[in-house]
Structure formats: C-alpha cells, structure tokens
Image 1 (cartoon, rainbow, N blue to C red):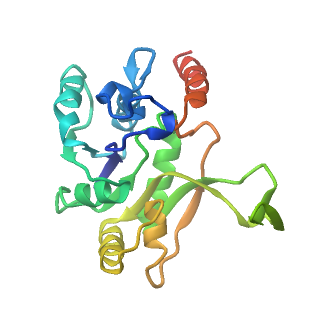
Image 2: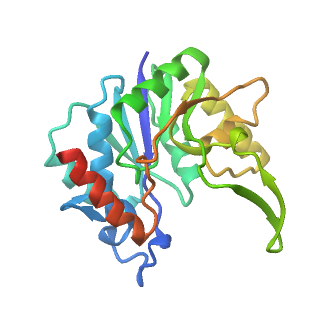
Length: 236
C-alpha cells in the first residue's frame, strides 16, 4: 500500500473577508499564521508525522510555489512534499495533482489544507478503512436540528441520524478517484468535495469513519480564535 496525500491550497480564501483578497500569500487563509506558522505548514506537519502516509502533494497557485518552497526548505519533515500548480477551483487543483502522482500510488487521500487539527489516529483509521473497501471519509453527526427550507420557510425537519457533516481526509483507491474525476470532466459536473464525485459512480459505497468536532475547517475570521485554542492544547 502506498498512500499519497493531496492538499489543495490554491484558493483565494475570500471568506476571510480581506479588503485585498489577493494581496500576496500572507493574505490568504491557508497562509494565515497560527503562532507564527502558516496554517498550511501546520497541516503538512500533521501528515508528515503519520506513519501510513508516503508522500504529500500540495496544489498551489503558480505564484505561491516559490514562497512555499522556501518555507519547506527550512523544515525537517519525515515525508517528501511536492508542490504542483493547482487550478482555479478545488476540483481542478485536485485533478492537476492526480496527474502528478507516481504510478505505484494505491490510495489517494485528499484533505483540506486549512484543517490542521485532524488527529493522526483519524488519518490512519480512514486510510485503513479505504484500503479495505476502496472509499472512505471522515464525518460527524450534526448536533443541531436540521431543517429543509424554501424561500425562508421551513418545509420539514430532516432526521439527524441519517445525516453526517463531511470532513477530510477523504480517501479513495487510485483508479476509483481517477475514474470519478474523468466522469465529472466528461459530464461538466462540479462537486463540493471528492466524495460527491465518487458518489456518481456505479456500485461504489463510501464508508464513513467517525471524525471529530476539533477537525475544523478554518474559513472565516472567527475560526482563528478557536484554532489558536486548539493549537495551545495540542502543544500542552
């Protein structure tokens, strides 16, 4: 088993509500600093410490590659990290990264670059699950009551026991995820995550492994305070 992790990190992070969304790397969410270290680097470090991961591929805007390479050159990581050019969307970035994987990669894990608090045990659990069934993802059960609405009016309450909130990593057998991306390209389909592409294939069941409410996706300014708390707790 050889596992490659793809971190799509080419986004502009406009939900951070910056006055200049593209004012260089430091203005984008994946490069915002936690305790003096960019979020992306915290995430890379986590996967580099995972024994089941063989390599990490980061998809970036072309202008950011030199900046990130300088960061990595100052790190001592246990796993190789390769930087590739991403695309205008997350889907394009992952697809570009898939084209740079070695032929002997058997499992591909895709993880949000701005989820630095995923636990190594969770990474290993979802990789092992995917190794057995071909497709697995992290997810948590929502604690709030979920309503379906139309034009600001409630239509019905959706039973929570049949719902999960999708997290990453999402891990797939290499032929499976490549087939899913090829089908999406042929159909001009855009998904919100990799699982939404794989779901469109026939006779594929994606298994869900329990995630954690600490595995937050840092997408808005209010997430940063919680991220700082989690980082202090991890260090402690």
